Length: 339
Image (cartoon, rainbow, N blue to C red; front, side, top):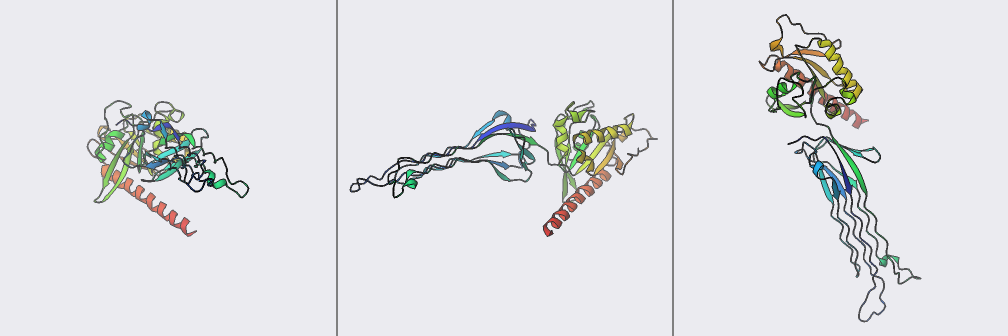
């Protein structure tokens, strides 16, 4: 399935039905009072998350969504039926923005979450509501309301625990393929990965975490060079970052600084995430290779996805940091509830 992580659609809630102008007509009541029924409400437009969806591809083919119109009122005080609502399913991790205002309407991250985005127009009231002692035969009804209409921009940000970050050909795809059941395309040339890949990493007997392999960073990515924003948004939600650097890079320290710089230019908050520096391709490193110092408190681990060196230690460290993040999050939520 093709991966699509942004889309723009238009949605229109249904208009309300007209209120009815009608008068009671019975055999022995020649001048019956008003009995016009109300129009039905127009259908609403809802968004709903579905954890089985992983792409916004469907919205590239269908861009317009319209809810049902409310039925008109009838005589004998009969109200029209409400218009049919429509529910648009989106993947978990979808950010919803109003195109006209730029306002973020919702950040939908929980499965089966439902949100109203366009309200149907109210039904017009029938003439029965407008009779008074001095106006016993009103020949008008209330006009119906218009349904809301707007353009929505969807932006999908992957829901992963660990994000793999690195230059093209740093070994991200190979690592995710050996640590999970994901089967990304792997080859010895840059930009093999053109879309993000997700893999579930099993840990011990009943534990697991989700790892995301994203397309490789190039210098200037934060300004839109190369794949630019198409991948940087996918590390915003991750709990832990693993910065992969190949052992055969000429200047590992410079590569590390460049990766941090690109992340900082895109969103400085990325530098606050827990991170691990992973030196890859140790199977081709010379015997006298020395692990570099990152110049900060980041842990440095050496691995070879080909022969399996260091993979257990890496998995242990990633699990420790993911689980620690969850523990801190729950503690913060409990403290906020107490306050």
